[in-house]
Amino acid sequence: MLSRLSRAGLQALSWARPGQGSITSRSNEVGAISSYMICAGRNLFCSATISTATGSDSNNKPEAKISVTFVCKDGEEKLVKVPIGMSMLEAAHENDIELEGACEGSLACSTCHVIVTDVNFYNKLEDPVDEENDMLDLAFGLTETSRLGCQVVSSPELDGIRLKLPTATIHFKADGINLAYTLCVD
Image 1 (tube, one colour):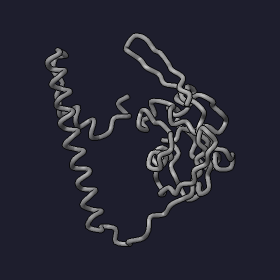
Image 2 (image 1 turned 90 degrees about the vertical axis):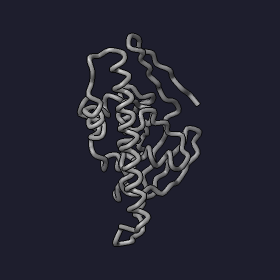
Image 3 (image 1 turned 60 degrees about the vertical axis):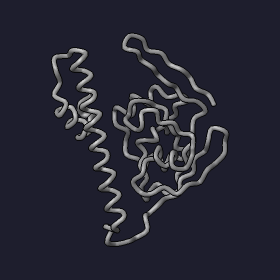
Image 4 (image 1 turned 180 degrees about the vertical axis):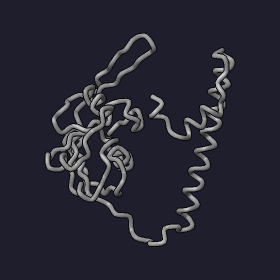
């Protein structure tokens, strides 16, 4: 679990200086972590905005993009241009395609499950890591060419890829004791 924490998250945890486990110290930890993450996020976004606004890209080349076709649940096809290096989950969100991504790409759910329709494109993808395979085991409508959209990152060799969205997703909810799931069909 610690391997999944970002550097900022680890810094926030060390900055919070955990107390003795009391309710008061726990709430102080949460407040400290929240404050740190807000500050870190503000600095990150400000520096990105400044470098973009000042034109720090000396080449001034247009951003390379590939064509991706999403086959929606109702069969409608949407052709979108996706910048190199962007995940298919991000591309779907930017283009108003209904690909959920409940965990925001942290490999903690299967709601961004996509099916690569051409095995030749599937074979060009990097092999899924164990965590992705674990989440795919929970996906609705799993196929031999299923992947998580958050783990499929655009690259020049994927130009022309077609991704089919499953007709349903499965949501898991744990309350500390019980585990329940809901099948969501649009």
